[in-house]
Image (cartoon, rainbow, N blue to C red; front, side):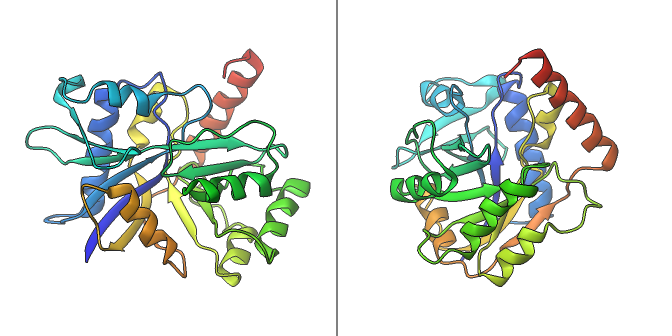
Length: 267
């Protein structure tokens, strides 16, 4: 039975240096593995429309990469292996982030499928599940309040809903109480998958791989995405998490930065 460390919410923003991205991911996941720890390391991409981090990696297969990191293919279309001599090998799995009509997000873990605009929350979850990916509805500051929170609650209480997860992220303040919908998810047998969710600022590259979850099960290096999805499909509770979430000052700085981006029209 293999131990697998998974960052379940990763963005390869254009402001990130690719070599720094993998340096920080390797260091953070190595720290999570601990001294002498033997574990597979996996980054689940959640790319927004217009992002092309995974496609850029595919173009580097067989060629020298940034800071000595090289990219190798696997036996599946939605994953690659990234490694550097003497360093950790990282699995990078393709995925998408969908913004729904309700201005909520749904993650599609483990798929290169494209999802059309204008989907409702329930339609997005169904579309992701139909594509063979793992649907995740991630926490976001203010996104689960009022009416939008009731949409998520209705899905949690629904009877004919494809299997999905909620998502935690490293930007949620450490001192914050457990969200009410996480508690409801536990009652309903819906797991919570943590991930770093780095924001589009250069200093956030250090967060990649710093928050995530631990899986244990049969892992095939040639088909890592299929392995992770198979293990997730068999979970009956939230997996163990690793890493730490954001401090209050860090959270405030990040939110102010995101507000500035929105007001400046930067996407």
